[in-house]
Image (cartoon, rainbow, N blue to C red; front, side):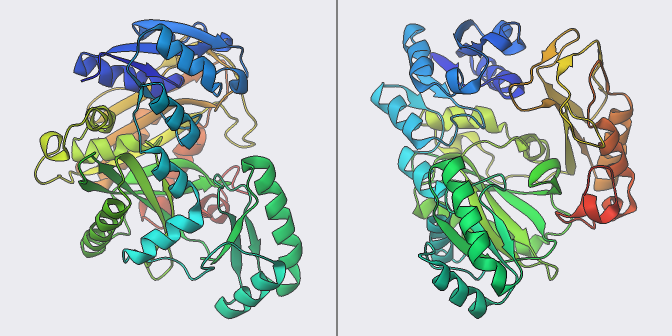
Length: 450
C-alpha cells in the first residue's frame, strides 16, 4: 500500500481523495495555487505545497511543478482527480519515469481512448453498438461528402481528440459540409493540438447515458451499471441520476457484458466511464471513453455501496477486484446528483466571489461534496462548481422528493448559484415522468435553455 499520495487537483475532488486516503490510513499532499491558499484541500491534507500563481497553466497544469512537489514530499503515488492532468498520457508517463504510481489507466490506454475514432473501432470489435459513421479519420471534404450521402443527413462532425463540445459541428445540408468541416478542424487544432475529424450519424434529441467501469492490474473488469446524464447545457452536464429510467434490466445486462469484454481486451485498469447516446427507439450507441473518475461518480457509489475513489487507490496498489468488490454488485434504490455552480440560474453568467452565508442540507439520504465554506471565495480562474448535492432513495420518486427538500434547505449567499434552476428541473412534469433528452432545457423552456 502507498505511504503518501499527492493529489494533483483542487476543490471538492481533492477533498474527496483526502477522505478516501484517510479511510485507508494514507498520508496526503495537497498542491495549491496562490488563489487557493486558503482552500480546504490545502488545510485538510497532511502537507500542502504552493505550486504557482492562479492561472492553471502555471500551477495545476504545470507538470514539472507537480512532480517536484511529489519528490520533495516523498510521495509514492499521484491521484489526478478529474479535469486538469487526469487524461494526460504524457503526465502519466512522467509519473512512471519518476517512480510515482499514477492512479489511473496506463498511459498507452489513456492515449488510445483519447482518440475517439480508435475507441470506436475497439468497441465495435467487441460487439458494443456504435453509430454509423467513418471507419477512420476524414481525409478530405470530398470524402466527408461521400460518406454523409451514404449514411444520410443530418450528420455530426467530431474532433478525434476532442471533448466538451469543442471541435463539433452538426451538418444538415450537403452545401454546409465543407465549410463546417473547416471550422471544426480549426477549432479542434486550437483546442487540442489535433485537427483530426471523424463523422457519425446524428441522433436527434438523444439521451446521454454512461456506464461506470473499474479494472484491476490483473485483467479483471467490472461494470457498475449506468448513469443518466441527459440534463445538459452546451454539452455540460447539470444533473445526473442512476439508474437510468430508460434502460431495461435486459439492456443493462447486455451492455455491461459487452463492455466488460471490450475493456478487458484493451487492458483497462482503474476507473473509467463509457458514454453512449440513446435514440428514440431506446437503442444505445457508443460515443467515447473517459479514462478517469467522473464528477458524477457519487450516484454510482450511492446505489452500489462501492467507494470508487478508495477502489481506485487499491487497484493502483495492485489489489484484485475480487478482494475489494462484493461478489454480486448490488443495485439499490435510486440516486440523483445536482451540480451547484456559481452561475446565474437564468443567464449562466459566472458569479465568482465571497460566500457570505452557507447552509448545507442534511438528513437521511443526503450527501454534499464541497470545498466551500462561509467567508470562502469562489475564484474566477477555475470551474465554477460550488458543491455537488447527492441524494439517495428507495425509489426514483423518493430520491426526487429528498432532492427537492435538500435544495430548499441549501443556502448560498453572496454569489448566484444554479440552485433555483435545479428546483425548476426537479418540479417539471417531464423530469418526474423520466422524459429526458439532451435538449431538455430548451424543449421545456426552462431558464437558460436556449
